[in-house]
Length: 118
Image (cartoon, rainbow, N blue to C red):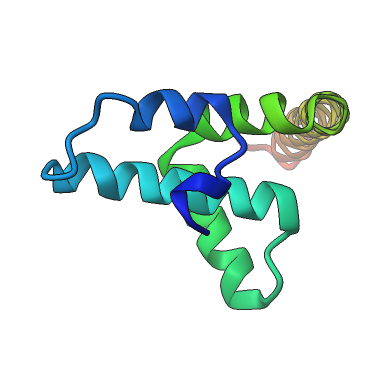
């Protein structure tokens, strides 16, 4: 993707005023442009999906900013899905904890019934 093809205003603002000689900043911007491409066009392959995941992990706030800017409805749906998944995960962890506590209590009771001490 060329710099002229960038859609995200967030990325365009980063480009503005950045010196061509600033290699570290250009690499950062190029990574964000790759993120934009993944957001707009998908990963395309397993290798692409892995790279997208790496960039999302490396630049989580930027990813959210660009995603929300370019696809706000899809981003909203994604965040809602993540919220529901987190709630479900917490519910399952609570159930596992309760089950573990019940098991420990039952085992202790068996121990005591067999003449063991506390």
